[in-house]
Amino acid sequence: MNPRSDASGAAGPEWTTTPVTPQLLRGALDTEATPQGLLPHRLPAWARAQVPDAQLAMAESQPSGVRVALRTRATAVELDVHRTTVVYRGAPPRPDGVYDLVVDGRRTCSATAPGGDVLVLDPATGGAETRPGPPGTVRFTGLPAGDKDVEIWLPHNETTRLVALRTDAPVAPVPTGGRRVWLHHGSSISQGSNAASPSTTWPALAAALGGVDLVNLGFGGGAMLDPFTARTLRDAPADLISVKIGINLVNADLMRRRAFGPAVHGLLDTIREGHPTTPLLVVGPLHCAIHEDTPGPGAFDPEALRVGEVRFRATGDPAERAAGKLTLGVIRTELDRIVAQRAADDPHLYHLDGRELYGEADEAELPLPDGLHPDAETHRRIGERFAARVFAAGGPFAAGAA
Image (cartoon, rainbow, N blue to C red; front, side):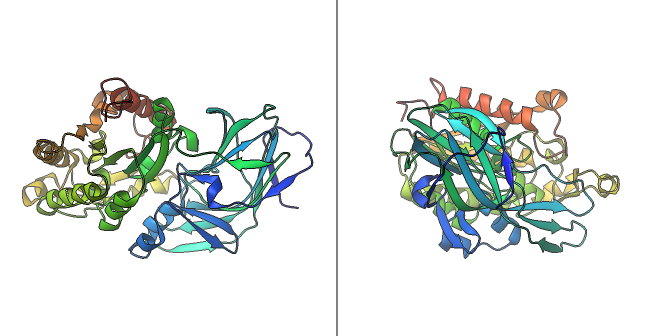
């Protein structure tokens, strides 16, 4: 018997086993059958074949925004999973990934899963080591009686293979088409960074407040204006699209100003090939003190690692802006210009300065714990502000606005 993480401690009922199929998933663009179970992906297979680095491959396989969605009378649910957790050598262990149970749109409880593989990354050498482990079981009991929609939100920060699903009543997929689909792309902050759980990342919170179905293409370290990501956004079904641009281009020191503008135009051109009139929102970077005026590359702070903490620092020279190096300030100026230019001919294109979601005043109250990523409380603030500015009446994604 697999180890269990029981959300209630109740004794197990008589189980009905249902194959885990793509029809039971929301928020995934693809799935892969593996020896350890069904692996949800947030990039299609053809795009994964073009992924150039292990960091992005890992991030897209972590199912941020992906959930098992059921319509059922069941009062108990078990999900066997084979997870892969990530630890950084020399840093404290990260919390276990969380599974959120959402019933008829309301989060009711959360659980974690034991077991799984452990991927050990060494920030000093770039080395990686995988330590294999067994699958585990997440169990929820005490669900309300009667027909209901049940979602199990998978961890936003752990690669998760789905092994088996058991319930104490038959299940069916939740019918599609009831809500607008919001397709969002961004960095690790959009993926969920230090959020408390998968349904409380800022995009998940904003989607719940906006009454939309989220497809989250937030990739830790992977918002790089990649052409395969642009084509994925072009081809994916969506009623609303947003792209959050900035922080990864700076902390990776990926390109100079000369290349940045045409790359943004290329991203937007490609999206418009598949979604010519879909509301499209360009979101600029949040406030981040280390990169506001200092270029990348970003790096782990070695002094912090020596005392078992994770913090980031900018290693560039502000004087290098004159040679075209990017900072968050430079990117905001360019995005203002590009969106204003294109909006003259594209009435469905919008812009949001990321500092409206998290600005300098917010940093004084809710500083970024590692200098780069928001914590759980800040995710909530960003999600609520996004919903108020974007989904509420008068916003670009307001119901009936398109």
